[in-house]
Image (cartoon, protein in one colour):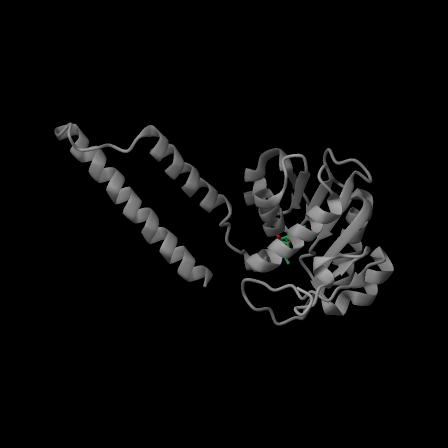
Amino acid sequence: MRENLRVLKTSYMYTHLCIITYFREMGDSDDDIPKLSAETMAALQEFYGSQETDDISENWSLSQFWYSDATAEVLAKEALQAAGLTGRIACVACPTLYQKLQHLKPATCTTVLLEFDKRFAIYKEDFVFYDYNTPLKLTNLQENSFDVVVADPPYLSEECLRKIAQTVQFLSSDKVILCTGAVMEDLARELLGVSVCLFIPSHSRSLANAFRCFANFKTHLLNQTVADA
Ligand SMILES: C[S@@+](CC[C@H](N)C(=O)[O-])C[C@H]1O[C@@H](n2cnc3c(N)ncnc32)[C@H](O)[C@@H]1O
C-alpha cells in the first residue's frame, strides 16, 4: 500500500514537473501561453515539501516500524484529549505520532519529539536528540514538564524498557501511554504503573510480535472496542 502511494506520488510529481517545464519553456517564446502564478508555485512547493517531511522511510537497523495511519490517529486523539487544549505532549521514539499530532493539534498545545534518528531534526526546535542508553541526557527539557508522555521503545528488552521508563518518569507530570510488545506487560506495570488497553495498535507493515498499548489513566479511545465505536 505504502509502496503504491509512493509510486502514485512520484508520478503525480513528475506530471506536475512536466507541466511546469512546459509552461516555462513556452513562456519565453509566446506571451499568450499562461505561466503558473507565484501562488500556484508556492502551493505546489508547500505540498511537495510537506509530503517529503511526512514520508521518512523506515530504517529497520534502527528498529523503526511506523504505525498505520489509523493507529497514529487514535493515539494522537487520545493524547490530545488527555493533554487538554494547552497541554504539553512528549513523543518518545514515536515520530509518526508526532507527525500526526502536527495535523490535529490546536496551536495552543505543545509537542516535542525525542528521537535518535537525526532525519527528524527537520522538526527544528521540537526535535530533541535522544538515545535511550543515556536516558536522562535530555537537553533543555525540564523535569515533570509534560502532561502526557507517549513512548514506543525500539527494543523488546528489559534493559531498553527500564531506561526508557527512567526518561518517561523524568518528563511526566501525569499521564503515560506506552506502546510495546505484549510480552513487556508485567515489567511495564512494575516500572510505570501502566495497564494494558483494549486497543490493538497496528503498523504499516505486519509485525511478528503482538503489540499493545498501555496507559496509567482511564483512556477513552484506547479502551474502546469496535462495538463501542
Ligand atoms: C519501534 S519504533 C517506534 C516508532 C513508532 N511506532 C512510530 O510509528 O512512530 C522505535 C523508535 O526508536 C528509535 N530508536 C532507535 N534507536 C534508538 C536509541 N538508541 N534511542 C532512542 N530511540 C531509538 C527509532 O528511530 C524509532 O523511531
